[in-house]
Image (cartoon, rainbow, N blue to C red; front, side):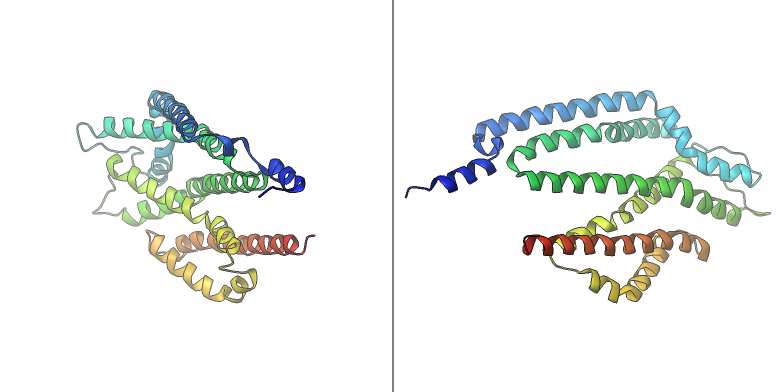
Amino acid sequence: MPTTPELTDSSADQQEPGGRMSFFEHLADLRTRLFHACGAIAIGAFVGVGVAKYIMNYFARPMTNALHNAGLKPQLIVTHPIGYLDTYITMGLYFGIVLAMPYVLYQVWLFIAPGLYKHERNAVAGFVTSAFLLFLGGLAFSYYVILPYLLKFLVTFTSGDQFTPLISQDEYFPFLFKVLFGVGIVFELPVLVFLLALFNIVTPQFLWKHFKYAILVIAIAAAIITPTPDAMTMLIFMVPMIILYLAGIGVAWMVVRKKRAAAFGK
C-alpha cells in the first residue's frame, strides 16, 4: 500500500542512522565498543596499580585518624604474608575500573544512542548522569561524614584496660567498602522513585501521604545498616535517607507534571 508524502517525511525525520545498520554492522560496532572499553579498563588498571599505595593510604586515613585520636598507634596490621600485596593489587584494579568507567559508559552510549530517538537519548543521558553523580555523592558523604564518627565510636567503645584494638587491613578494607557502597546505593533513591513514577507505580501524592510510614521503614533500614548500636550513628544514616526521600517526592512531582503537559500538548 503506498504511503503518503507526509508519513514518509515524518518517518524520515524520526529515523536514526543506527536503525539502518545491518545485523553484522551492529556486531562489528559492538566489537569495536568492547575493544575500546576493555582497553580503557586495562589502562586504568595499570594506572591504578601504579598509584595503589596512595589510594590505600587515603582510604586508611579515617581508621588511622580514629586510632590516633584515641591515643593508640595509628597503623593497620597485616596478618597474612601476602595480605598487603593482595589488597594492593585489588585496590589498584578497583580504582582502574572506576577510573575507566566514564569512558566505558561513553562506549555503551555510542552503541545504543544511534537506535534511540532524540528525546530517548536525552532521557537516558540524564538518567545515567544523575545515577552516577548521586552514587559519587553517597561515597563522599560516607567517607567524610559517616566514617569518621563511626570509627571514632568503634575505637572508643573497644578500648579499655583489658582490650586494645589491633585493626587488620584484611578486615578493615572490606568493612570500609561495605559502608561506602551501601551508602552509595542508598543515594540512588531519587533515581528509583523516578523510575517508579515514570511507570505510574507511585505518585507524589502517594509518597507524601505515606511519609510517616517511610520514616518508620527508614529507621528500620538505618538500624540494620548501622554497624553500631548508638542512636547518633543511626541518626546520621537516617537524615540523608529522609532528605533523599523528600527529593524523590520532588522528582516524582516533576515527572507527573511533565507527563500531564505532554498529554495535553502543552
